[in-house]
Image (spheres, one colour):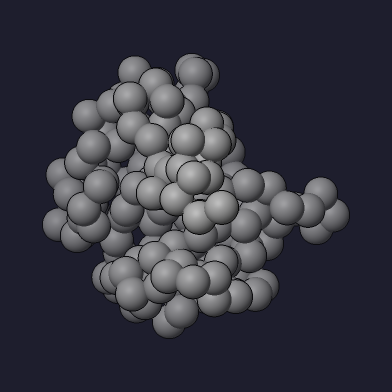
Length: 158
């Protein structure tokens, strides 16, 4: 049976939508991601898949840190803005206010919640690189329902 026959099943997998912050020196960047999961309780770690040739992955390799910004279901315009990488302009990232904390990776003021991670391991996985990050900081900016791929009407079964 060809791999293409798996596409309908792959499209049923549940995904959240996140904005991943990265940095390289003073440069910061943000991009939309959906392949993220917690992979350890002790220590707290997450696994993130990033396109291997992306600007964000280049930054993560250089700095060995990244942030995860959880987006509210009501903030679909925010997630759409970060489908393409966004650059810094003063204290804004693509026009969105952000701050930095422990790692220097951008934490969006509009995010529901956020995590900062230090890279523990990376593994090539086809056209993406799996990044395992130890959570070093995190917090909640406000309450709300997190945005999902399904709520956006998007699918990722290609």
